[in-house]
Image (tube, rainbow, N blue to C red; front, side, top):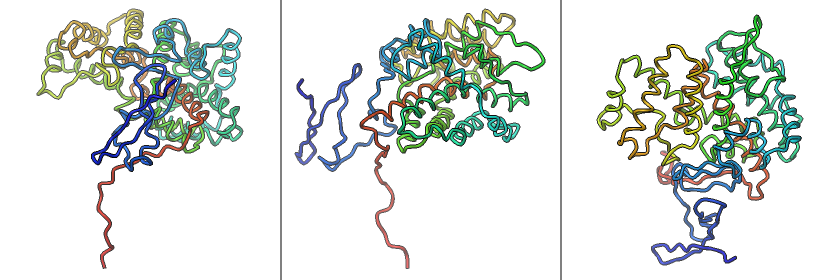
Length: 426
């Protein structure tokens, strides 16, 4: 096959040729790894929005057409037919598991759900009012002090066992962060339960009575976790890759990703949705007034949970989670004025030409926030839930990076705008 190239010519007429790289899907990329060597220039791309930082076979997104694929499988098919642990296996290994492979994988994850008793002491060392994300960042980073037997990143077996430990222990740690914040006793994992049921029990059970599972709630949470399992080279995933590129151990790398996710521009969107709905409800505004304010360019109010930076048409995850959201709210029943408000707002925007023309459809965060609130998960735990679901995506990218023959430490360039060289005053 003939190599495709592009030619760059500068203002002085000097030309250089660069290879065009093609992926399975998506636009071609100009390989500029030797740009400085050939031209003496480098590129400027704030936020790396137009820069391919790596080659990856895990997830593909086409934002214009609303496509999300994991290892080639459409997200709607995975959400309908798979469990969260099957998605974990797929992201880690590249293929869906056979029945025997899934049985072995599930057993391995269940065997790692317990955490060292000193982890419980570690979490209890935080202030009673510590934010759960602060506890999660610190605790996941501290895991590296417990597992010296698997920290050699050059050993494939060590990498895999670390991945399994992280996927297995995140629900346990997340529940402990919640229960410490609430002053509740920690609950041990129950490996007779599914991954999501186990988490719900560790979150909400009390020693004095049997915990009754709600299958619709468990299903809603499981699908929500599937939809958040990976989303290509977002800020937190890129953080994991950049931290890991230095040779940092997997627990430190994932802790860095959690810290990045904590930023309100990344992991806090579903919390912003609930804050918005609370504000509308408490103010007594009507849906008509709310819609009018959202259209008013002079009003700082904006609808949270509508539109998406990547998806320019619709968020394919939102179409899946919307149905589950409605089923969960119907199952819970009762007087739920805030949820009624959310559904009325959804209906009004979907009919309004203003939002249709601008493709401002409800996104996954709009529905996930409502689901988490309906499950009685407090808002300061919303991003913890996101991190728990996304851990498998982070560790899959970390594994892929460590197997990449082009793997090298990340080192972005800059345009220096400070003082020119000057002498120290005498």
